[in-house]
Image (tube, rainbow, N blue to C red; front, side, top):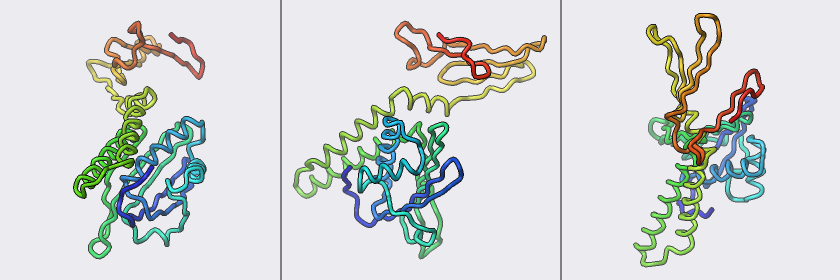
Length: 247
């Protein structure tokens, strides 16, 4: 991905693995406008290639595509004098991730960090698309201001934005968003049936007066993206790791 950002946007990325290990990488080209789309591309590359979601994948991607991800590993002493700090949490078992972007305060005044954005699988691709659209608009304005042609850079940013939007609407990404937005409905004295609602599906789990665990699913309000062409919803029921129903 090409970049039209001003040089000298320094940043450090601290990667936290599920095991608790942490490593830090620095780059002189690390604005959110550049790094967020690249992290989204990394995630797509991990998924498509079946790679482990860990620091080694970061390094492998950086080696395969030089000039994209920060590759220079540093110590704490090298993390000062930067414009942005990134915290990237990788959860290999669930293939989840959390990216926090912080703007570093003016060291000459009151130092501090300001959270710019917090991203997960549910919104990373959408944010990357928005960033690419903004960069394309910036390229177009610069070309108009100077009477030139926006050229290839404009098409590159527009193409990336379109790809990220398609990724955002894919079933795996939509599913993550639905899961993260799931809502627990606790039991009350008059309705003693706790439930969880996810993607419009309401699942009630309770113990009846005879001591039997009952699980009830209401699929009538399922969101459209869940439904097959025949309007049914794919369901799989697992008990103690064994599939007891699938349809």
